[in-house]
Amino acid sequence: MSEVARRPFAETVPTPAVECRELSHRFGSVQALDGVEFVVGSGEVFGLLGPNGAGKTTTIRVLVTLLRPDRGTVRVFGLDVVHNAMAVRRAIGYVPQQLSADQSLSGYENVWLFARLFDVPRAQLRSRVQEALALMGLEEAAHRPVATYSGGMVRRLELAQALVNRPRLLVLDEPTIGLDPVARAGVWQRVQELRARTGMTVLLTTHYMDEADRLCDRLALMHRGRVVALDTPARLKQSLGRTATLDDVFRHYTGSQLEESGSFRDVRSTRRTARRLG
Amino acid sequence: MSAAHAELRAASAEVRPHWWRLLPSRVWTFWVVELYRIRHDRTELYTRAIQPALWLVIFGETFNRLRVIPTGGLPYLDYMAPGIIAQSGLFIAIFYGIQIIWERDAGVLAKLLATPTPRVALVSGKAFAAGLRAAIQSVIVFALSALLGVSMNWNPLHLAAAVLVVMVGSAFFSTLSMTIAGVVLSRERLMGIGQALTMPLFFASNALYPVHVMPGWLQALSVVNPLSYEVEALRGILVGTPANLLLDGLVLAAALVAGVTASSTLLGRLAR
Ligand SMILES: Nc1ncnc2c1ncn2[C@@H]1O[C@H](COP(=O)(O)OP(=O)(O)OP(=O)(O)O)[C@@H](O)[C@H]1O
Ligand SMILES: [Mg+2]
Image (tube, rainbow over all chains, first blue to last red; front, side):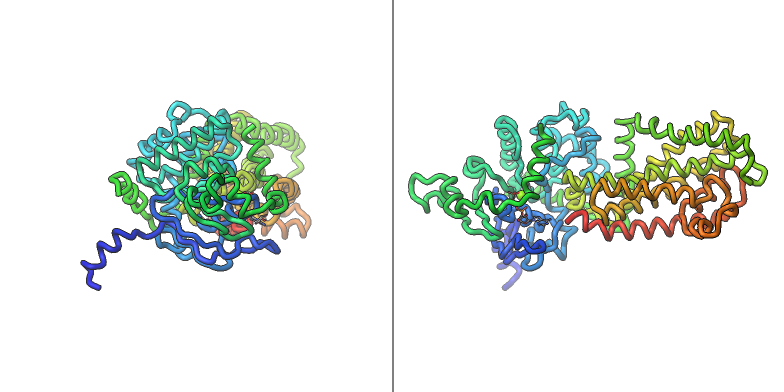
């Protein structure tokens, strides 16, 4: 194929943001991931759902290069997360499940740290930090210690930290866990504005079916380390009948495994988050 | 594709410094962050000055009168001050691993490791941040010593060299702490081990008395104790006792390299 013929093709079918193939990982005796497969298109808002212990966080940790998988491949914009870890990191903004801003610093300093760690050029440093804080509505609080922030503000600060690098892919592990309804709406509003402005790809996990339904273009439902259903929210519901809700879909595919599959570790980390919020 | 998206693409494709430029860049970053932390909470600097002050005032003044320790003609307080400066850095650094365990528990470490920061650069950044804190602390101990009438060499060049020695020595002890953190993985155990370590490190060194008055087995410990080299260098720089500064510097630098290597290798255990 000639160069001319190839180019339009490459532009109409862009590299997927995430391509996850036969991903498996085991922690001791726990098979956390057991052949996870999904593809996230560039510009999509993609949701990972599933009960506690389904493997959502483990999948994300592989994706953001924190965990080397036993088997399978994950590519981010065509880059292998194991062999091209540094380049993958430069493309991703990551907000982990726990609330994890540094309490001994101000909001501005927290974002500054990440701007530096992503090698934002010195001349742009100040403006980029301010831009990220402004995007998350934190200009006013920027110079206050994070210890005085509410849970919703800490979450938005973490988003600002993830955005200061202007990532192509934003990875959010339960961005609204433990937040009150107003704070949740605040976080979502910001993510949606951002997406409307930039067309950024977003991969997120959530336990809130209403959020998943309204905000995600497509959903993958995980259960026991596998993707058991994958489609748009509308089609997932349709497949179970006209009046079905996403809750029904969730229950249909995961049964009533909610209690037995979550481990103490999950409960502990959730409690910790709750305590930090409270 | 929108213009904004194109701009984003351009942004994530921008500057990709070589790995050898990442190291100094990350060290500088963690230095500045440490300065921010100190600015937010200065009380820690003052409370940590109490212990060295007590050593100098009570132990130092007493032994100054007793004159039982062969210092080669120096007033005991002058002999001891460099040892106390090294000790105050040691006490800061040996518990520095607690911070990394806290960061692990809070999810901060995961976020740091997901940035384009090689582990060696992350650990070095943390180590020199600990070194910076110790160096600033040492300035307070210098001031205390001046108040107590210790006659040190107040030449700014000598003081700068001493601060550098404190920084490198303390950076090493913080990597020792982070290495232990990577082994024990819990704050409580690290506290316990840190406390159990500080005493032998301190007493099996030349911080309070010359090596030749120690029993043989303690002398052997002192030879492999980096604190001894730190103290020897400080004493040479500040009060002019004989010191092999080249050897001291080499030992401290080698210890730091070994410490950074060990703790960045074990960092994976914390991140798991
Ligand atoms: N570091 C670890 N060591 C041992 N087991 C782990 C570790 N991390 C996760 N697991 C186990 O792997 C399985 C998947 O966990 P994971 O955290 O990916 O689930 P999750 O879908 O994110 O759950 P949640 O909704 O509770 O966050 C669980 O059984 C969990 O206990
Ligand atoms: Mg999870």
